Amino acid sequence: MGEFAEVLDAPGVEEICELRGRVGFMAYHGGHLEWMTDVIARRAADASGSSLYAVVQPAGMREHFTSTTVEPSASASLARFLEHVEIVITVHGFGRRGMFGSMLLGGQNREFAEHVGDAIRSALPAYEVLTDLETIPVQLRGLHDRNPVNLPPQQGVQIELPPRVRGSSPLWWDWEGPGLTPHTESLIDALAEAALTWTTREP
Image 1 (spheres, rainbow, N blue to C red):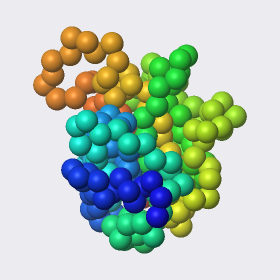
Image 2 (cartoon, rainbow, N blue to C red; image 1 turned 120 degrees about the vertical axis):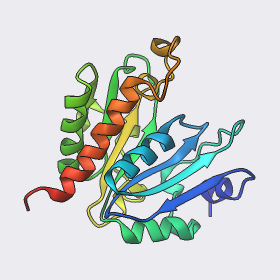
Image 3 (cartoon, one colour; image 1 turned 180 degrees about the vertical axis):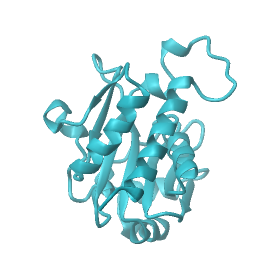
Image 4 (cartoon, rainbow, N blue to C red; image 1 turned 90 degrees about the horizontal axis):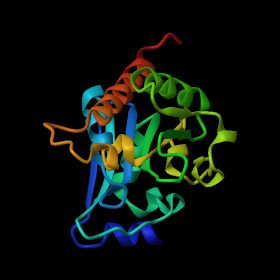
């Protein structure tokens, strides 16, 4: 089955599938691999009544696998999720020099990417929210047909989040809470709003 199936079988790995609305949030690099991505996806899904699929690796485990190995044939839960939803927001984390204040919105549904991008820009104006594919590094564009962000009927948007908005940069060295960092909370609110307003927009 490939790397994804092997990670699912590893001790301590948690696979989460919650079916609600037809918009879905995904975070299959969750836990200690791409820190906070599963938390952000879960909070946004809960707040908007959206569906959720996440894979959470335990402390001490950081096994990366390529998105093209995340196939419904490897997981009955993933297959159910992809059969249920119409469109998805996939949450990833990245870190690149010169892009620590940037969020990258890839995926094949470019109208949805602009919709989600507008919501994030309103909530977090200090960040650069890139929706023009030419401004996103090729390997982070999420355009491959086998990438799970593109498997639902309306495909979806892949969001690459820098450490700063996930609360794991030096900006937050003295943050003691309560709750998540303000930037992370604002992002979750924006993602939930984007999911809700997409389903209620005029046809």
